[in-house]
Amino acid sequence: MAALRYAGLDDTDSEDELPPGWEERTTKDGWVYYANHTEEKTQWEHPKTGKRKRVAGDLPYGWEQETDENGQVFFVDHINKRTTYLDPRLAFTVDDNPTKPATRQRYDGSTTAMEILQGRDFTGKVVVVTGANSGIGFETAKSFALHGAHVILACRNMARASEAVGRILEEWHKAKVEAMTLDLALLRSVQHFAEAFKAKNVPLHVLVCNAAAFAVSWSLTKDGLETIFQVNHLGHFYLVQLLQDVLCRSAPARVIVVSSESHR
Image (tube, rainbow, N blue to C red; front, side, top):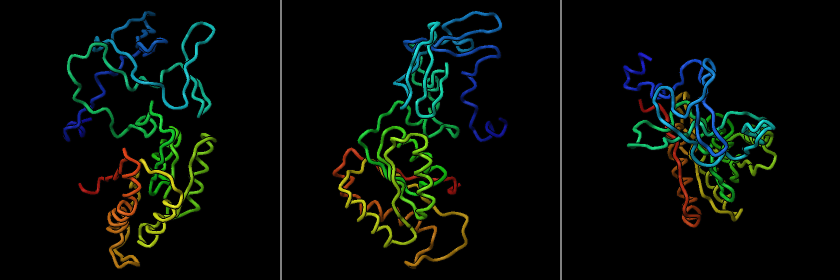
């Protein structure tokens, strides 16, 4: 905490942290209330801030609301095959009577890809994620796929890419996900990928430029360019140029370039 304050990054979630013995719950119509297990009472106002809140938006993709025999609301996660009495939208509550816009950010370093897309339906959308067989790329591809998008994992290592596809299908067998070869360290491979993608005759709504090389010794690619510069920057730039016509025809479309902490 001291280090965060020194960097000017206070713990912005401390205001909403519940005191010991309290629990946050929701009603069937989305209003948030608070249960005090010590005093065995409930109230509408947050015990610290005094604010009333309600959950915002629809349930995340794959979730459904049910009521048990005692009239208690619970939630079914069909993707992960589990049930819970905790509303998954509690992370995205809004004030009942907001007085002014909140200045703190909605997402931070602990936010997951599934939370970012919660409540969104990407059915009918086509998404390409480079370097999607592991790490942030995999989580991004998985979240898009589990929210209904047709996702293409563009990867250099097809064996690992196929494994990643299998892991997503294990979570939801109806997911539309596939792998295609893309080696950003070889411009000819970038061109082949673009040609193969266009041959599918599908739109492209989101292109996530995520793949990157790091912590490698200085070297040149077969194209005569420095490896990290080509993989992280030039290869993606070339890919966007080759797919620009498809992106324009698919408008509204987006190109997302993943940054890193390396600039620090």
